[in-house]
Image (cartoon, helix red, strand yellow):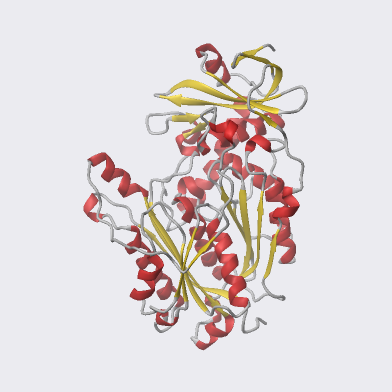
Amino acid sequence: MANARTPVIVGVGQLVNRIESLDQAIEPLAMMMRAVYAAEADVRCPPFLDRVDSVRVVRGMWSYGNPAKVIAERIGAPGAQTMGTLIGGNQNQALLTHTAMEILAGKHDLVVITGAENGNSTGKARRAGIELPQTEVPGRPDAVFGAEQRPEHHDYEVAKGIRRAIQVYPMYDNALRHERRESLDEHITRVSELWSRFNDVAQDNPNAWVRDNMSAETIRTPSPANRQISFPYTKFMNANMSVDMAAALIVCSHGTARRLGIAEDRLVYPLSGVEGYDHFSASVRDNFHTSPGIRITGNRAMELADIDATDLDFVDLYSCFPSAVQIAAAELGLPEERPLTVTGGLTFGGGPLNNYVMHSIARTVELLREKPDGYALVTGNGGNLYKHAHGIYSGQPPARDFGHDDVKAEIAALPARECLPEYEGDADIESYTVMYDNDEPVIGHVSCLTPAGARAWVNTDDPELVQAMVTEEFCGRRASVHGGRLSVTS
């Protein structure tokens, strides 16, 4: 039986705004308001938003100063605390964990969390040379959640032009292929089949952005609608940020839920939440095919909830790219063949940048209401497989209080690999990717391991070499680096 301070999610709301013309566009603040009111309606009790004591908004790509204050005023709770967050795909789950801890400690009773992005409409407006109207929202929130961390890319990566996730995550996948001893064809077939199963889930999710059926062959085959982005990924293997989506969660104490008259079958319970960070950059990690951060964070979250991976009925692994899912599944002991998303992932469910995981949590709540004796895992990931936040949920009251842990220190104590600013000599190719431009491979980013075990980055724009790198296996091959030029010797 839950105690009066037990945190519960009582309402969820989602908005998917597909537009045919720009006059149908809705700015993020208005989208958040609609999601908040949808979450209130989802609770199925008399209006109560005027009792909210904290409004929390996950940071988006918009320019508002303190949107939480506007939302608090519009819902009739002008005295509510306002909170924002820093940037990062981990922020939703980490903020939910923080909120649950504060409710358990008696610091808050009724909290609204929301966020929105309008990447689809802003992209269309930009191409049309139109500036969409946006409400002026000055000020700063009362509090900003999240700790400042290092930049997402090591200085030596940036020096080689490696500044984007689409340049790094495919390197993880190529390393996975080599580690599993798959051929290029075997690997891309397996990965596209994994992503096709994500698409299957999206077709059953009423709030997914892409609900059209896509076969594995369609996903892996380059076409005018599915251009090659970075080897081995096509467009349909990348997060889809061109979406207009919003979500909201209403979280309160169990005692508040009772006082509001909320039915027990609307309640979903956060059981545990854990945060942990891998070494900040691929440059200094031991390898490209594992994540100690995911393993330690996820296992601790399950331990605090007194379950293991076999108990999980629903799983949503952060899915910006297929490599993130494959690595997480392996670290957490989850077979790739089982459902690993509840939304369809950031490709098909939709990838509203920092706010994706709020949709994961909202969908998880819906599913646990249908199976209240089940357990669910939701994971968030900020940066390049860097900042991890995991949460366990159930439709049943917990046997113990909400559990939280921070395992960053344990992960930080693990060995790191030295990364060199420049290197001359023989080396082994650890992993690589090739970036495309106008459907042509143009530059290869290569991670090399020196005989002493240090890592060094090398670029190549040799036309014959980059073409070979997308048709042959280059992981594990011997190479030499001289004057910044890469030569493959075996």
